[in-house]
Amino acid sequence: MPTFVIALQLKIFTTKNELQQYLSEVRASGKTTGFVPTMGALHQGHLSLLAQARQQTDVTVCSIFVNPTQFNDPKDLDKYPRPIAADTEKLQQAGCDILFNPPVTEIYAGDEHWHLDIGELEHLLEGEFRPGHYQGVMQVVHKLFDIVKPDAAFFGQKDYQQFMVISRMVSQLQMPVKLVMCPIEREPDGLAMSSRNIHLTIDDRRHALILSKALYQAQASFDPAHPEAAKQQAEQMITSEPGTQLEYFAIADGDTLHPANPKSTKIVALVAAKVGATRLIDNVIIK
Ligand code: PAF
Image 1 (cartoon, rainbow, N blue to C red):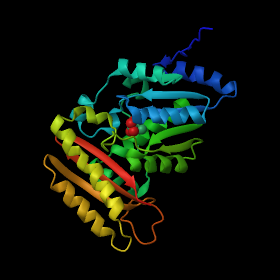
Image 2 (cartoon, helix red, strand yellow):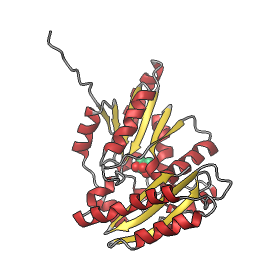
Image 3 (cartoon, rainbow, N blue to C red):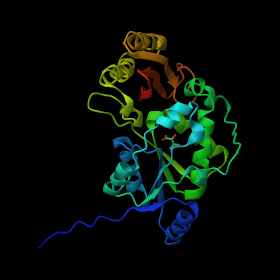
């Protein structure tokens, strides 16, 4: 008996009206939807989010939209990779049901203003180095949630602070969506997967390993009585690595992102650095 593998067709939408119409039929049939918002240049990290979404919900929607409002450097926005043909193929292979790939004009009407006060969370760590970044992230995620109306949405732990920011928005605005954080996917040598890794030269790629090494070192040597010691050691490792410019290394309380203290029930080590011309972030959960 011959066996057949039937590849289900990936449905692609570029307008919100068509997507919303299709999704209202999906909902009417009683099916749940899982959403993976991305900016494309998909790698195993994104595909692991999709795999989670497929496990937990009936119909999976992935968006690819390079959101201009979350870039504080126009050059960074220009050079952000956009390999849409390869991305579409990956989603098809991974069994994604729907791709939403709108043009900028479909998402933004023109001169829009957005501000949601989530307190100091947006100004710490990433917020200090990328002012306004998380307002842009909230703005687009709010719009995308409004269009897709997912039952659950899946984000990577790699941008730990982003997950906290989005959780804060969802709870403040009482948005009816369950948020799921999925673990970081790493290359065999420890480098956290990122769409930006594409920009690393061979030398950068080698230097970039210091970030995960420093994080793991901090995790292994962390002593709650002396949290500063592990931080200083990690900072020293990174600052002595050639081609690498440390922005911050923090051992933080996982609920507030303030420096960890003896009462912290969750502790996370987070790092951001420029390696060559590429800015990378990474983190590990210590507790
Ligand atoms: O994490 C990302 O790729 C982006 O910040 C997101 C959540 C898709 C919003 O543009």
